[in-house]
Figure 1 (cartoon, one colour):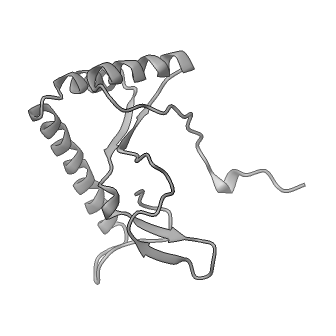
Figure 2: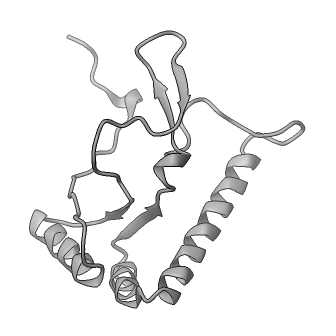
Length: 143
């Protein structure tokens, strides 16, 4: 589940706008550091080596482990107001466990990173997708 964007600013009563977001960022960063520590303790040292190599070359972006689908919330936007449902409702047999955002100049470079990750953590699969930065305020005017 991604955060941000939906016009949410600030947090609780009397809390300055942006303070809650900063707290959430610090919490998320702490959780990622904890996940790294747990990964090493669980024998995923090989995966940590690949991540460290990518980090040292400044190619590793966000890496996130998603919570189980039982923690999911679905927003159905085919009506007004959108319907909010607790639980996983994706119509797929596969589940997204997490993601890596890695800077790669070519498709071949991205495939090599996926191979390295696969050797470090056998099983499952990696889906490679290019990422495009989206700035709605920079869209061309309609014709």
